[in-house]
Image 1 (cartoon, rainbow, N blue to C red):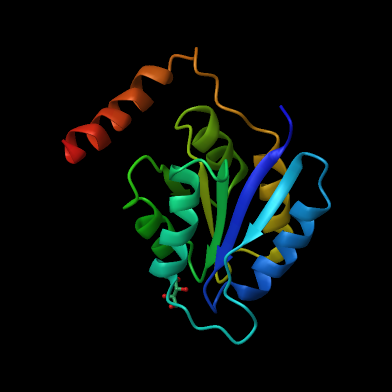
Image 2 (image 1 turned 90 degrees about the vertical axis):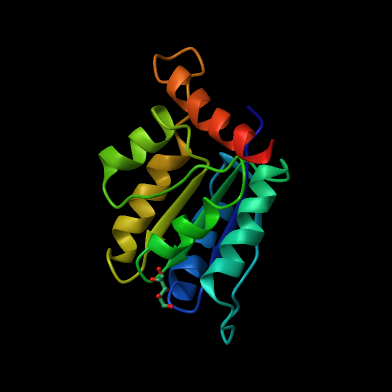
Length: 155
Ligand code: RB5
């Protein structure tokens, strides 16, 4: 592995956390590149647009993963999941973050700045960077079923 390429994005509710988490990603040797799709300090782009831009970068392979922050993490995940091939979750505890990658092969983690504190957010992201899906695991067939749903929808 040569290092994660990660797109990070937030709406105005998640902006401050995005800045903190971008700094963490940029300082982490496991991360090769960070792409920031906003918002900036006075930006008000609605979360579905930010999520769509970030998720499309995952779907077409420009980045491996996306880290998204809004008020709850919910809207970002809902919107990112509209992009074919993307598996996005909201997770605010270590177990769920781990299973989102190990069992669900989720490429997108959405966090809620109004739900958890910045230190927990940093801890979860640090954990997330160390996780990879095992395609030979028992979970693999189930993730393939999700991929099939995407394929059927586009047929
Ligand atoms: C604010 O727009 C809030 O709704 C948003 O940040 C997010 O929590 C949505 O899920």
